[in-house]
Length: 375
Image 1: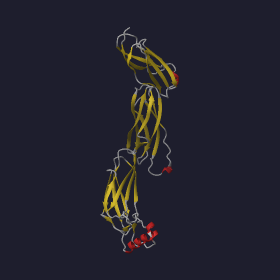
Image 2: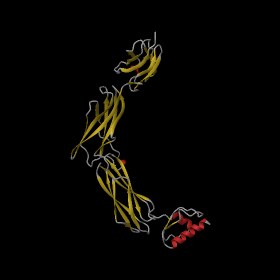
Image 3: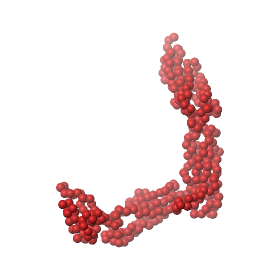
Image 4: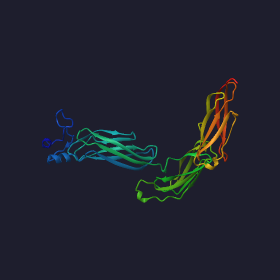
């Protein structure tokens, strides 16, 4: 019964020669159908018509690749939208996902069997990356398809780097580290020479011979490439973050070009103490309270250098400090405070932990409030 009803509806629609839709939201008590566009002059049995009745111009995406573009530059591309149906498509609006794309429509509608044109002006962003933007074209007619326009671009500086910065991460003091980055030529001419000039004393660079590029990579790749090995030494650097620069100078047919690469690292002490102080709070005379510290060593440091830990403090006989080795990179310090009898007082001092072999001495503050008791 259901198939006969669908077949009758399709035949009636084709007979009047109009584009129509099967009901999507029926009234209560009526069967529910998916909305399907029905084209003119479709003469076939009902089940086949339901399967093949989608327009030749059903929802589609058109794409345009601008290739390699420089940051901040503006480019225009034209999209041709074919109308392979017997219906008129009237432009309604074009939605953009970014203000960097500005569409301009040629004409107001697309005639049956004709083409419509949308010119898109694209503004490249400031940073280097493989960009992709979408625009959505809407028509006034319900039977018209949804059209998506895709603009692709590979945004690159003439002197491009394989990474925006050289990130060394956390490095122990008095340590060495190495990283690398590639210099890429995205200009239209080859470079005759390339030089690298580090601007920080803790940076050294070594540029390798020109790399052989894979010709099968296709268009859009760099013209030339060089690898630069970057070395850092943190011996004389303070604890904390540091940033250096490497100037890359190239000689082109139009003159010299220079671009600066960043090198970022953070120097950690070779050993840290957690927590950073010994806080005993309020403690009564003749009582004993213990606190623990963890000494954590950076794995890059030689574990042999921490076999001998020397501890001293200026609190007096009331404080006893011992150590215990947990692993090659971790020690535990136990401090026990046992105030003597006497008046109430505020106890202040410090524990000093040294390791030798160039490791810095750690100072751990000690604080406590002693409640006095009668002798």
